Image (tube, rainbow, N blue to C red):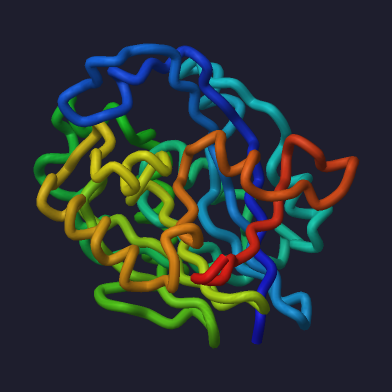
Length: 265
């Protein structure tokens, strides 16, 4: 089955600088905004898969983040019924990737063993780590596990024909990326394997690093999953909305369709 993949731009942050966003800083400092995305993968038969669950308005207010739209309403406009959605892939458990989990009452959540183990383990309470999570989100995921609604991933996993998950770590202990077969070719939703195109194009890691070695290894793994690096889609880069087209005038500025390019393009 070929899928259509949509990037939903639900939030932004305009106060970032280049020195904030690259490991070991950047000597050519300057403004460096980022976007926050959720992703929808929609099949020919309208079967849908959601990748990541964003942050909530409450978390945005607490952390001083912008909210540009209600991503749940946007999902509905793309044909995704949040109330009955069956599969939500959480690439990792940082606050900006799982905040709306409770809005999917029927879903099972695909999470790596390493990610869940870390955030329920001995070091998760250290200040340097817990700044990137919301405690209630983690507790909620633990509760869902006891209800049988967490699908654990410990190796390459198939969510559905044409959709596979690839645990790599790096930015977080159990970070995973998503490979999707579309009608025009294969793409990789990198999530935070690479926040920006520049991370993997210039081999420059993002500033938040759980394992630097795994982050570099993840860069290599991304390239092995696609025919051309143009089909790697980073997790926070505003350029995503410059490289892909809006799906409709009503959703302009909020949704683009991710389309694969040929290696010879």
